[in-house]
Image 1: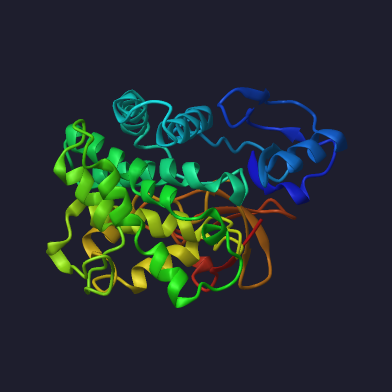
Image 2: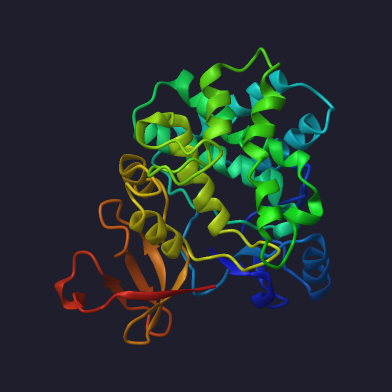
Length: 343
């Protein structure tokens, strides 16, 4: 199987994974043959990509670290709680389920593919940041209780955006200085909203307040730097940046995972903590299984296997000749490299 932009999916293609609605209820089961009518309806619902079965990706199995249905149910419930239909304590079982799933599947490749467009972004982004943060926490050997608190901070990090006008959040053009000043208040708004939540500890709330602080002191709201920023917030800063960059937004298309990772690594110990980045790079897959890539010699291939200790040089199978290319271990391919991800 492989992930493909919905605009490139042809009628007659076989669906490889179940599709869920925004309440986490199954809409279509795997092995359904996609018709033109189904594809049109999925596009109208906001789907931007699907997992499909075809000859190119034959034999490739893609597992989920956290099931798509759980992610969507959590995002839906989070939206209800933040909008006043429930309390923060109701989130803990969902976060525990996510943490347990990540611990159980810690050896499964973590690929943060987003099937939905930007209009479903806000709450799924919060869930994604929680998943990424917990994954980093595991690599940094944090105990399970800390993972729960860290996941909670990730889930709630943008709660303050509930106080920001949606017209500003969805603006397609560049924000004015005044508008950006309003947006920069959301960490403080979030912190204030959570001060009365007795279920949360002070470190979780600090993570929400500080997730836009930067390692060199250039962030906001307080201009903290280095270890003045809590570990939770330093982890959230990396997770938040990565998921924001690799997601479609109202004002731009998503960056490729490789571009986002390169940005983070290029800003290590400047904007972000290098220790966190090192752990993060060991979590996230730059070229997910089933991805189609183009090499510097113009050949296109599909990713068959990744190497954790050499994330930029996976095992590939060429699309035309089915030749296996091991970029890491085969010295015949030392001069080959991946130039772009083809979605």
